[in-house]
Amino acid sequence: MLPPLRPLTQFKIHTVTDDPRFASRDFFVRRRYRDFVWLRGQLVHNCPGAIVPPLPPADKPYKGDDRFSVHFVQRRQAGLELFLRRVAGHSMLASAEDLRTFLEAKVWELQTAKNASANSWTASILDATDASMKRARAALSTKTPDDDELER
Image (tube, rainbow, N blue to C red):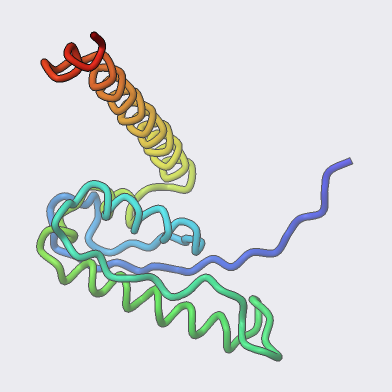
């Protein structure tokens, strides 16, 4: 038996552009809040030095609202729209490949990109940890002239 479906909120993003990098001039996609979180993480990681705007908070709705209430969804939508407008207005962020993927990719293509970035992120963490351990081992095994005098 399949588990019951959980409701979710998707936001329609309508893009009109004359940027030749895009396949079309006028198109739309639907994205969830977690897709915006992925985009922001990618921009922070891949655009060092750029100030990436914040997302609206992911916290709980106000008292009396739930996450599907009209008021909550409208507030979140306004915050996500502001985020995208700020990203599109920033020269470095607007030209990021991750933004193009976010705005143009089909759902399965975006998921593939998210999976690939998660794997590369994990690999970079493991590589950095490995390099730190090697430096620590090298520091522990390195002797200075003072060390020889102390051992006598």
